[in-house]
Image (tube, rainbow, N blue to C red; front, side):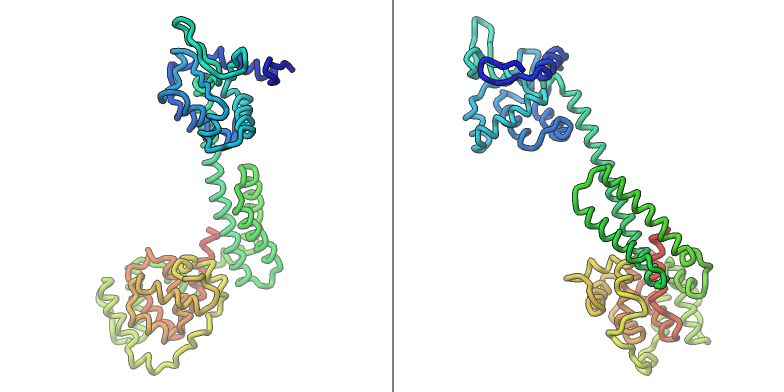
Length: 412
């Protein structure tokens, strides 16, 4: 391997690369900060890290102006090692030289050594001769650097999209597993699916490459196919009476008004609603649960939960978590979150108290959490909740189908 008079070894491949760089046609001028920005995006392509680019930035700061103008001469900077280290906030000279060597090896700098190994500039007549670091490769290779930067940005976009896809697949697997535990507790597969979802969540905490994400996505796709096959009898069953109740929970304002009418007819056969205006539904629904009727009923327990696990409720109604300080770990914390979000949804205090007396505080909280998931589909939450309270009073309502319906959305 050739050795320079100053003790530095020179790789033959590096010499060939520098010769090719010098033969390349450079643009008249390139903004040095544009080059640095593109190189920062493409640094992995050239085997560089942020410290290498910091040293290059320091060298570029010694070049006057903003442009690398190769047409007017060779752009060479010639600071001493100590001067470079001072501009690098006291980086050790040994570290600085190591980073410089990487930049030279990457073909982004060319050393122009003087006869005595020092860096300086001399003028001989009208000719300027400088010895130091030649920055012209940055201008000559700017198009190549830009292409590499664009390819890296495209790769990062694909990684981001695939990461989001994997996150959604993991969430669907977790929700379907909870649905399977509730609907088919006799099957032994749910622990394996749950472990896969948990391990995927743990893996997503790390910075994963495209190949790793594709491998995870492939495994999740197989898992989802398997769990959907196990739940096929549940997901494809014909609409039953309980399914009819599920469909009634997610309606537009016209259907909400119609539901209020049906509840009113069930309680007061002699009364009817002449039209479907939402404001009128709010007014007539006030007649469904008069205070004297509610007061004659035995209040349900405020702490007993519905016949469905809190875990499935939180997996299906995740929006309610945003309104709980310290998270939701039991029925009491779910109730506190519902108390917080209820006025934000436009549910009056009177309707809320009636719902809690009729359904029970926890059951009413579950209903609010389910309504929050489809809040955009319900124009009058107070009227809607009152109609559900009337059904609960008649013994024809349970929050379980609402939660199960939300879980089934993950399989769509």
